[in-house]
Image 1 (tube, one colour):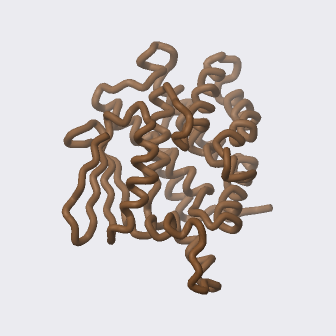
Image 2 (cartoon, one colour; image 1 turned 180 degrees about the vertical axis):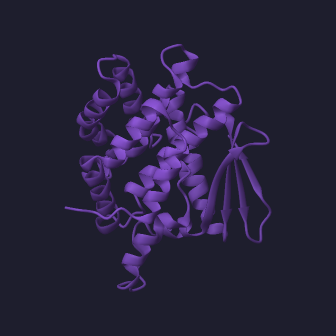
Length: 274
């Protein structure tokens, strides 16, 4: 089973490389080039789109989430906000970024089995991968076990159904919720157009609400440390904002550091503060 690396993936790989150095940079290259990681990402996407009629849950989505997580962490740090490992004196920023990278690249791999409890099944699937990659990056350094636990927490908590306690896992929740741009629905919409008979299917609301969102941007906020700026072409996109992004943000320990600003054509701009 072989897959073609898309231009979008190459673009995201370049963006990720610009955000990391040292151990996280080494780990990123291993993740990008790992056959097992690549294969289960692709198969997760196949299950999501072909069998479940869902949006993208594959290599592009997982790279976007990893990038979002690193960008959010960077914005917080630039304003003096520390994540859990550095705040508590347990580890370094590099350790935090390694956990964010791993969680971003692996969080939806449970979709290869089932949508239900996919955040839990991902733990079983990815444990051997984490051990192998962390051994390569950390060698005999026992900090790899801390990074592994932090990654597992971020994966387990990314749906907002389990109470999480680390700020890194909170970053992952927001990062995952921010993948709302219309490109995420392109494949499933294209795959269903040819045989659409007017009968709605479960998942249709997610496809069309995502399709209404043109751009999501992360930047420094005016009211909070991080701003999620969302530009949509019609109000259908509010479903994704309120049900997906805000639904996850409500469970995130960093929700008080994030503002969500929505610009929709024909309507006044809206700011969400949780």
